[in-house]
Length: 416
Ligand code: UD1
Image 1: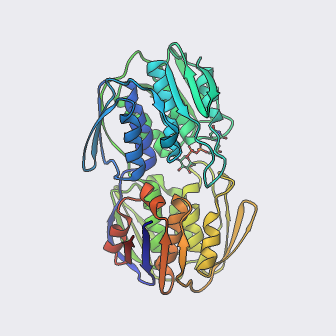
Image 2 (image 1 turned 90 degrees about the horizontal axis):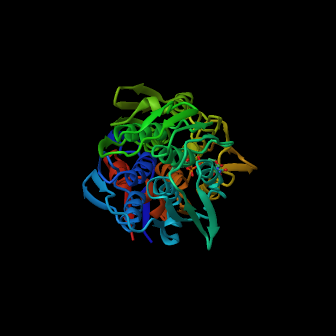
Image 3 (image 1 turned 90 degrees about the vertical axis):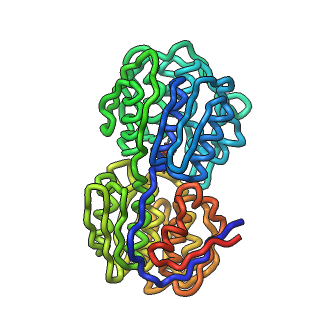
């Protein structure tokens, strides 16, 4: 299993280019199922999760052509509207094919995702919403079996804000008969990017970016070109790495307007932030100050940045209280951080992080994508060598992470 070896203690300097957003790209790829024409995408990140989604679509009959960060998909012949367990278990976002398959073909068979490292993560709201649009859904042999004549527009209230749930229903509603209204919809920028792509494909959507999204169904969608938005979580991760390790870095192809909550907390920790149209600058020349934070749906602080801020607080002056309100089991990184010398108490959904002056290198194990990012940041500041094992999690969501960090002066290498 591949590992990252990091020799910490080097401040980061220079420029890093941010990749396209994984969590915008995944629903956009699924949306290619809505039309027989070609969807041509640019700024597509090169990541394992993207490869998994493309393979999932290919085994249904979708054809794809990839060149670097460009990817075209054509769903002219889809003979097999099935997402098998073997693929869904490696990537929960596979559930995103349910809405488009049902909307265009009237049938879908998608494996239930099951549990994952950070909590139970049910998909009941996806199913309830599709049923409200007229789908008949049963669970058999671990699979969601869905059938429908043409879906019908409906008013759907989601009692929890769900990102992929909102995306699945918004995609399905595009080809439904009549108007759908999604209430308590997710406002995440990735939902907005998906809506913009769907609109380019001929969908009639309004209210994306607010908590009420209205979709007027159309008979068919057509091909389009779309550039995937920059990854705000990758951006936030590099910013937090600089805040922890010190230094001065410019992040290019980044969007500050999607990161207000994170940039505010970095400034509170003592970082000097400059916001440009397409770039963000950060300078940090002192030990960070601990910050309190609470995760919540956008525009509040993202759960996908919580682990990285635990690493920042771990070496900060003072004590930071980190409260996780989205997922019930998202402090797996804490046990590993203790191995590096961090002082953290977990009480229920709260981590009380007492900053220490230094961490010391050790071998640690990545348990999920963002927990891995936390451990890499900790490795960048720890004295001596930190070995982060099981980095396949990192490769799901961070394009060329060791090359990007090496470019900033970090001492980091991959080994078998
Ligand atoms: C997406 C992101 C993930 C991020 C998360 C929260 C993608 C591919 N993944 O995941 O990186 O951490 O948003 O910002 O975009 N819930 C239900 N019933 C449902 C669906 C969700 O109760 O049917 C609950 C979940 O258990 C969780 C909360 O809603 O407590 C939010 O989850 P959700 O927004 O759905 O997360 P994902 O879309 O899976």
